[in-house]
Image (cartoon, rainbow, N blue to C red; front, side, top):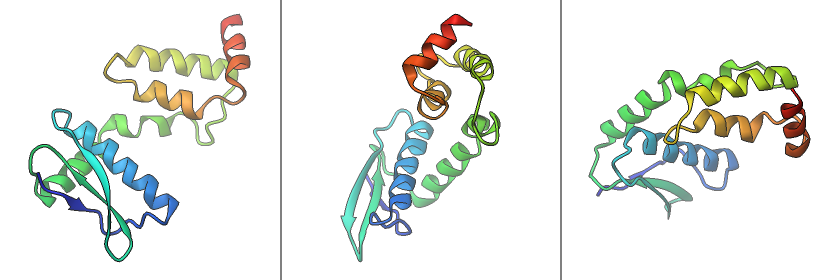
Length: 132
């Protein structure tokens, strides 16, 4: 097992913290048979590092990230609408299409919708969804 320090990310920066979480998610998707872990190490600042069950070279890590982040499904949520503001009907149509694409092992699109596309409270939207 090899640790790879993500030197460009400083844990004191909230955006860098989110980027480290994104690296963890992308590598977990790219290497589903490995247990990818994220940790923090004090260098000149707190820096994230990633490791997996099997030792991977830095080149393999970069290639895995590049492949995963350029996969068509990685950018799918950004094709919904530029401002992500949907009417109930647009949300209903998008949600049904997302459900058709997702399964027990691939919930990313549905999770994205749940986290970012609810324009109002969840309960109210659920009622409007059911009323059609």
